[in-house]
Amino acid sequence: SGNTFVTPWAGAWRHEGALTIEADNDGRRGVSVFKNGSEIAQVSAIKEPSDSIEWACSWSLPMSLAAADVIDVRAKTARGENRLLRATSYAALTYMGAV
Image (cartoon, rainbow, N blue to C red):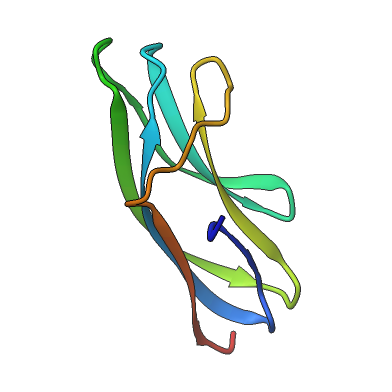
C-alpha cells in the first residue's frame, strides 16, 4: 500500500505523511502509526460534520528505531473500520542518522 515500512538499520528516523480517507459519516476518525503491530502514536483524531465524505490529515513524527522494525499507518473510524486510502495519500520513512 506504500504505508508499511521495514527499517533496514537502527537509528533516528522521521515518519512523515499525508492522507485522505473515505469517511463513514459516523463521528470521529483516527490515524495512527504502529510499530511492530502496536500503536505508538495517534497522529490525528477529529470529529467531522455528518455530511463529510472525505477527511484528510498530515504528520511528521521523529522516532528511534531498531533494524527490522515494521512501521505502518492505519486509518480508523468511530466504528473501528479500516477505511480506504485515497490517491492523494503518501507516507515516507527517512533516515536521519545514527542514535
